[in-house]
Length: 335
Image (cartoon, rainbow, N blue to C red; front, side, top):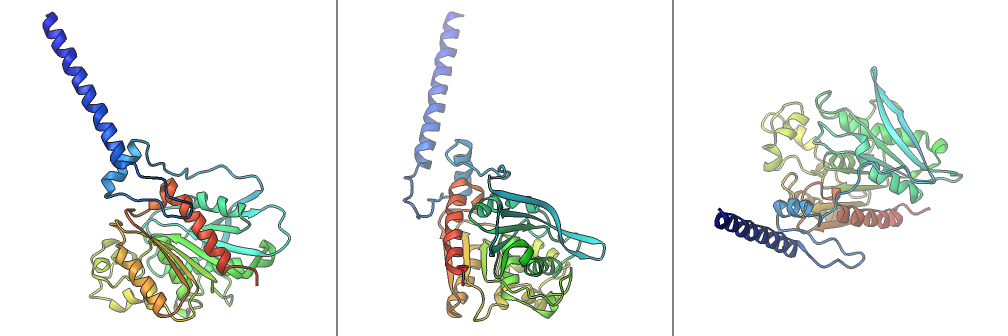
C-alpha cells in the first residue's frame, strides 16, 4: 500500500511538473516584445493562439460597459427618425459645457446586419466625448425586420438628424464623420460613398437635409459584395432579401460601397486584420487600392496576425483609438 501511495505521489508530481512546463512554454511562445508608441500591436499566428493568450491572461479584452467619465453628458434613447410607427433611436455623449461647435461622430454597430446593439460602442463613444467630440451611437433596422436598403437608409437618417439639429447639439454640420465595424463598417462606407443618393434617402425623416459626411472610419467592413466569397455567404444573401447573386447582380453592386466610390469621396481610415476569416483581408486591400487610384485621402491599418473584431482586445483598441483620433484631427480640423 505504501509503495502504491509513493508511486501515485510520484506520478502526480510528474504530471504537475508537465502541466507547469506546458504553461511556461505556452507563455514563452505567446510572449512578444512591447511595441513602441505608435506601432501596431503584434499579432498572432492563428485564432487558436489568440484564444490561448486570452486564457493565460496574456491578452486582455476591453470592458464593453465602462463608467461614464467625468465631464461627459449622456442622453439615452433619443429618437433620430421614424419609419411608420417604428422609432429609430440613438444614445448621445457630449462634453459638458459646450459653447462652440465641435465635430460630430456617429458610430454604427456590427453584427452581420442581423444582431448587435448600439451600446456595444460605449467603449468608443465615452472615450471620444472626453476628447471633445459630440458622439452618437445608433440602432437601425436589422435584416429580420427589413432587408437592404433599410439599414443604409437609417444610417443616413442619423446623419441628417445630426445635421438638422447641429445648432442645438453644438455640432459643426460640415464636420460629421461615420465610424463602424463589420456590418457597421459597411454601412459607414455606404453613407460616405453614396451621399444624397435618391434611392437610399428619404426614409425616417429630415427630408431635404444632406447625408454627406466629412470622413469615414471602417473597421473590417465588407466593401464589395460581388466577390465569390460574398456571393456564397448566406448572411449577404439574407441582407439582400434572400436574393442570390445570379438572381440580382445589380442589387449586389448597389449594396457594395466599392461601386459607389468616386473621386472626391470623404477621407477614409480602414482597419483590417490579416487572419480575418469573416471578412477576408482582400476586401480592405481592394478598397484601399481604389481609394488610392481615385486619389481619395486614405490610411490603411493592415494589422498582421489579428482576426475579425480584433479591437475587442485591449491593445488593438488602444491603438485604434489613438489612430482614429490622429485621423480625425487631420481631417476634421476647424476650418
